[in-house]
Length: 528
Image (cartoon, rainbow, N blue to C red; front, side, top):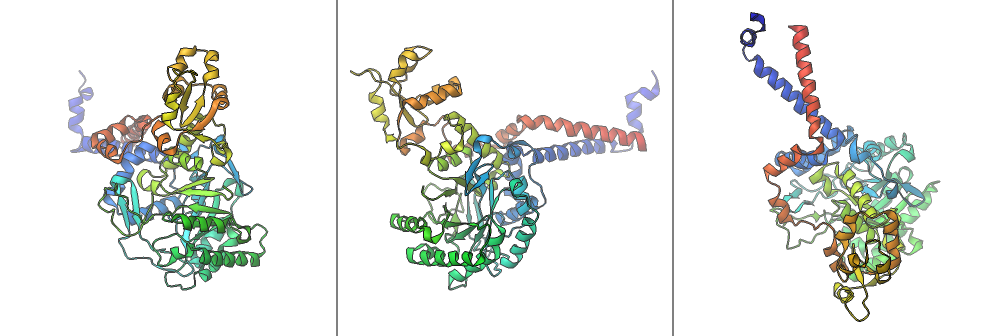
């Protein structure tokens, strides 16, 4: 045997530690390459099971927020995958403008407009909102002021309107907007707030209007933050009327060719009389309000919260006039629920904290799937304003029509809707028995599992007679929602690791590992 071909002889000639170094190089290259591919692709599993848990463990809430904004400003957003995919059925028109999808970024993430261009063009959002912006720069409340509720997937913040002020933010907005082609960018808004020490809030909002009205698609009058003393009192009818009249007059003075829409952001902790007063004011055309954002973070602390930080002071987040639903949107189901309740658009922010940027693509994909599931061909069909006034029917009443009574009527429930399919029994291709055995019951799972065609789904509308009350409709979903306790018990290290290893993008690891091996071999061949 040729001595030069003997592996032992070859290894004996290698310098000490050569094999260890080469192994480290290959693995490091592979891991770095794999991570880069997963980040660029926007892997939901990789972000949720690897990136975000590491961030939560080693970086506090406010610092991770700052780094997320920096990453967005540098363009470190998913460049492929679900985030960049758009769905024709999610396109919607509002204010004479076409939105590529109804999912938006709420104010609070990019407070000072540092990542406007990248967020508006490359994030996958249909609309983005920066702010809140105050006239004079202010530091906000003392740190710590951001608290994660990890067990409850919530966030408490008491930032207190920390802001760079209208001057610096205006420069960034103007610089970004000067190069925009509107069709390529998301609908853009600026959220306006008041300084902590300002006594007459109307003046602060007027300053914001004067600076930003010529450079944005919409303005938000934020009177809902719990972290600025006295701000929520602006939601009282008399004060609100004065504020809106003041803002309307300020906009009139600009004589803009394209006047921005004006939205009012209200709190969720309103009593019924306050909500009625606000509704009466914003629907009065003389005040020029184009929409309302419902709702901001709540000061309430539900008993079911379990996290250590639940008692911290701050804001808890997670029709005839357009409504933007905001708060607690983590999934397509959450967004769908708000749209079904009457929201024209939906905003999110807290979901970033737990799932990262890929949550945008996930919500759009799930929302499109839910529309298909319920037989809608377009998002506009799902809103409450597009639905006929349906009779509310309880499950108890549905159960009486179980095809066994005197009339032998057959009612079934599909996705919270009640259908009288008695006349269809004889026409059903699979025979009468297939449907009759579901009479008086929830047939959602059975109906969806069959995989009916669009024509079949469309046909069901002919038999629609009512809907379940909200309290009962929640129990008829196809996949039961897991409780926070269930989430916690299933998030063991082993399961998280298994999820990553078995994800569809795990094979991506082979690519950078192979590249690392090739790079190392070529390096050794050329330089040794």
